[in-house]
Length: 174
Image (cartoon, rainbow, N blue to C red):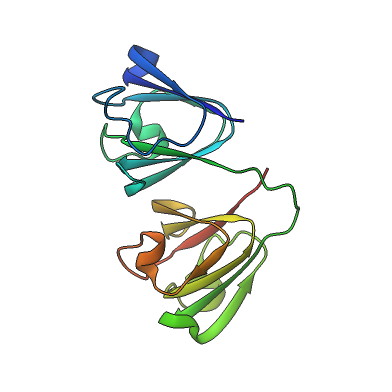
Protein backbone atom coordinates (compact mmCIF):
# COMPACT_ATOMS: atom_id res chain seq x y z
CA UNK A 1 0.00 0.00 0.00
CA UNK A 2 1.31 3.43 -0.88
CA UNK A 3 0.53 6.99 0.06
CA UNK A 4 1.26 10.17 -1.89
CA UNK A 5 0.08 13.71 -1.13
CA UNK A 6 -0.14 16.40 -3.81
CA UNK A 7 -0.07 20.11 -2.88
CA UNK A 8 -1.10 23.00 -5.10
CA UNK A 9 1.59 25.34 -3.78
CA UNK A 10 5.30 24.99 -3.14
CA UNK A 11 6.63 23.81 0.22
CA UNK A 12 3.53 21.68 0.95
CA UNK A 13 1.13 24.61 1.15
CA UNK A 14 -2.29 25.20 -0.33
CA UNK A 15 -4.98 22.69 -1.12
CA UNK A 16 -3.84 19.07 -0.92
CA UNK A 17 -5.03 15.68 -2.08
CA UNK A 18 -3.98 12.33 -0.64
CA UNK A 19 -3.91 9.25 -2.84
CA UNK A 20 -3.32 5.58 -1.96
CA UNK A 21 -3.44 3.98 -5.41
CA UNK A 22 -3.84 4.44 -9.10
CA UNK A 23 -5.73 7.51 -10.33
CA UNK A 24 -6.17 8.15 -14.05
CA UNK A 25 -7.44 11.73 -13.68
CA UNK A 26 -6.44 13.98 -10.78
CA UNK A 27 -7.80 17.20 -12.33
CA UNK A 28 -10.92 17.29 -10.14
CA UNK A 29 -8.78 17.16 -6.97
CA UNK A 30 -6.40 20.07 -7.69
CA UNK A 31 -5.67 22.54 -10.47
CA UNK A 32 -1.88 22.58 -10.24
CA UNK A 33 0.82 20.68 -8.37
CA UNK A 34 3.87 22.44 -6.99
CA UNK A 35 4.95 20.02 -4.24
CA UNK A 36 4.56 16.34 -3.42
CA UNK A 37 5.16 14.25 -0.32
CA UNK A 38 5.57 10.50 -0.80
CA UNK A 39 4.90 8.78 2.52
CA UNK A 40 5.22 5.22 1.19
CA UNK A 41 5.66 3.29 -2.01
CA UNK A 42 7.24 4.04 -5.36
CA UNK A 43 5.15 6.15 -7.76
CA UNK A 44 5.03 7.36 -11.32
CA UNK A 45 3.23 10.66 -11.76
CA UNK A 46 2.17 11.80 -15.21
CA UNK A 47 1.71 15.19 -16.80
CA UNK A 48 -1.57 14.22 -18.48
CA UNK A 49 -4.65 12.16 -17.61
CA UNK A 50 -4.66 8.50 -18.54
CA UNK A 51 -0.98 7.97 -17.63
CA UNK A 52 0.40 9.94 -20.56
CA UNK A 53 2.73 12.86 -21.13
CA UNK A 54 5.91 13.37 -19.16
CA UNK A 55 6.49 10.72 -16.49
CA UNK A 56 8.25 11.23 -13.16
CA UNK A 57 9.49 8.48 -10.84
CA UNK A 58 9.16 9.33 -7.14
CA UNK A 59 10.38 7.38 -4.11
CA UNK A 60 9.59 8.04 -0.46
CA UNK A 61 10.53 11.60 0.40
CA UNK A 62 9.64 15.27 0.15
CA UNK A 63 9.58 17.21 -3.12
CA UNK A 64 8.99 20.88 -2.13
CA UNK A 65 8.74 22.11 -5.73
CA UNK A 66 8.35 20.51 -9.15
CA UNK A 67 12.03 21.01 -10.01
CA UNK A 68 12.90 18.47 -7.28
CA UNK A 69 11.17 15.68 -9.21
CA UNK A 70 12.68 16.99 -12.48
CA UNK A 71 9.31 18.39 -13.53
CA UNK A 72 9.00 20.75 -16.47
CA UNK A 73 5.90 22.47 -15.07
CA UNK A 74 3.29 22.33 -12.29
CA UNK A 75 1.00 19.96 -14.19
CA UNK A 76 0.30 16.51 -12.69
CA UNK A 77 -2.85 14.78 -13.95
CA UNK A 78 -2.49 11.06 -13.16
CA UNK A 79 -0.49 8.77 -10.89
CA UNK A 80 0.29 5.10 -10.55
CA UNK A 81 1.66 3.15 -7.58
CA UNK A 82 4.42 0.84 -8.78
CA UNK A 83 3.87 -2.62 -7.30
CA UNK A 84 6.59 -3.78 -4.94
CA UNK A 85 8.69 -6.52 -6.46
CA UNK A 86 9.28 -9.26 -3.93
CA UNK A 87 11.77 -11.10 -6.09
CA UNK A 88 15.35 -9.97 -6.05
CA UNK A 89 15.96 -10.48 -9.76
CA UNK A 90 15.52 -8.00 -12.57
CA UNK A 91 15.92 -9.03 -16.22
CA UNK A 92 15.50 -6.89 -19.28
CA UNK A 93 16.48 -7.48 -22.90
CA UNK A 94 16.85 -4.42 -25.12
CA UNK A 95 17.06 -4.47 -28.92
CA UNK A 96 18.57 -2.04 -31.39
CA UNK A 97 15.67 -2.49 -33.87
CA UNK A 98 11.86 -2.51 -33.63
CA UNK A 99 10.04 -5.83 -33.29
CA UNK A 100 12.96 -7.35 -31.30
CA UNK A 101 15.33 -7.02 -34.24
CA UNK A 102 19.04 -6.48 -34.23
CA UNK A 103 21.46 -7.38 -31.50
CA UNK A 104 19.83 -8.24 -28.15
CA UNK A 105 21.47 -7.02 -24.95
CA UNK A 106 20.42 -8.40 -21.57
CA UNK A 107 20.56 -6.27 -18.42
CA UNK A 108 20.18 -7.40 -14.84
CA UNK A 109 21.60 -4.27 -13.21
CA UNK A 110 21.46 -0.49 -13.55
CA UNK A 111 23.29 1.14 -16.45
CA UNK A 112 24.32 4.80 -16.08
CA UNK A 113 25.31 5.18 -19.73
CA UNK A 114 24.11 2.88 -22.50
CA UNK A 115 26.32 4.54 -25.11
CA UNK A 116 29.49 3.99 -23.06
CA UNK A 117 28.63 0.42 -22.10
CA UNK A 118 27.12 -0.85 -25.36
CA UNK A 119 28.27 1.66 -28.05
CA UNK A 120 24.67 2.73 -28.69
CA UNK A 121 21.89 4.52 -26.89
CA UNK A 122 19.21 3.49 -29.34
CA UNK A 123 16.60 1.13 -27.91
CA UNK A 124 13.82 0.37 -30.38
CA UNK A 125 12.20 -2.53 -28.51
CA UNK A 126 12.55 -4.44 -25.26
CA UNK A 127 11.31 -7.43 -23.32
CA UNK A 128 10.99 -6.95 -19.56
CA UNK A 129 11.16 -10.42 -18.05
CA UNK A 130 11.46 -9.54 -14.34
CA UNK A 131 11.04 -6.38 -12.31
CA UNK A 132 10.11 -2.80 -13.12
CA UNK A 133 12.61 -0.48 -14.82
CA UNK A 134 12.93 3.24 -15.56
CA UNK A 135 14.37 4.36 -18.90
CA UNK A 136 15.97 7.83 -18.86
CA UNK A 137 16.46 9.97 -21.93
CA UNK A 138 20.04 10.95 -21.00
CA UNK A 139 23.01 9.27 -19.27
CA UNK A 140 23.33 9.40 -15.49
CA UNK A 141 19.57 9.07 -14.93
CA UNK A 142 18.57 12.47 -16.29
CA UNK A 143 15.93 13.74 -18.67
CA UNK A 144 12.55 12.29 -19.56
CA UNK A 145 11.63 9.11 -17.72
CA UNK A 146 9.64 6.06 -18.80
CA UNK A 147 8.34 3.26 -16.64
CA UNK A 148 8.62 -0.16 -18.27
CA UNK A 149 6.87 -2.98 -16.47
CA UNK A 150 7.05 -6.72 -17.24
CA UNK A 151 5.97 -7.38 -20.80
CA UNK A 152 6.95 -6.91 -24.42
CA UNK A 153 7.42 -3.50 -26.03
CA UNK A 154 7.76 -3.88 -29.81
CA UNK A 155 8.39 -0.14 -30.43
CA UNK A 156 9.59 2.76 -28.26
CA UNK A 157 6.18 4.43 -28.47
CA UNK A 158 4.69 1.56 -26.48
CA UNK A 159 6.53 2.70 -23.34
CA UNK A 160 5.77 6.34 -24.13
CA UNK A 161 9.09 7.20 -25.73
CA UNK A 162 9.04 9.98 -28.31
CA UNK A 163 12.21 8.52 -29.82
CA UNK A 164 14.36 5.45 -29.43
CA UNK A 165 17.01 7.40 -27.48
CA UNK A 166 17.66 5.88 -24.05
CA UNK A 167 20.66 7.23 -22.14
CA UNK A 168 20.44 5.21 -18.95
CA UNK A 169 18.37 2.49 -17.30
CA UNK A 170 17.65 1.90 -13.62
CA UNK A 171 15.88 -0.91 -11.78
CA UNK A 172 12.98 -0.08 -9.51
CA UNK A 173 14.03 -2.03 -6.43
CA UNK A 174 12.02 -2.58 -3.27
